[in-house]
Image (cartoon, rainbow, N blue to C red):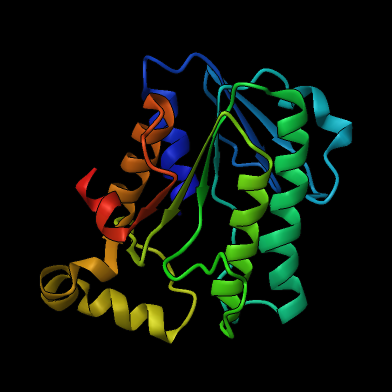
Length: 206
């Protein structure tokens, strides 16, 4: 949802000269700036390592919804995929800004009983320990999809239904639109923001 928006915004931005997109399946998108690489093993990137060299900005938006996969698979996608990707990128790009899509409630102490919070906290810690030139973590609350989609579960369908009449006006700290989030991540990534962690309210202000 967010990755596709960020990709299109980067392709449309005159400041961006080239975009390398590493995906698990082809998007069929073509653009003069775009180099799309289909890669299925997100625990090992060495066979495509040359594509990680001399990059300026990374927007990492890979994730999975709670309840979509078993516990072990959730940890693998959230933690292990992030570690493998970030380590090979750190090895090949010294002056890089890393923008990571995390989530509200991420626990950097790694003590939370909530799987989503703990695993995202672990992933954040991995990134900060790698000491990229800049690391920015984005922690949105509920993300309202501007483009209609099939919701992953009933709770997301319910949140979508109540977003405009209630949540956006009475509980803005809990939610953000997909457009707002993508715009903020691109702006921070391209201008090197001054915060390490952007909570939902900070993202909305951008």
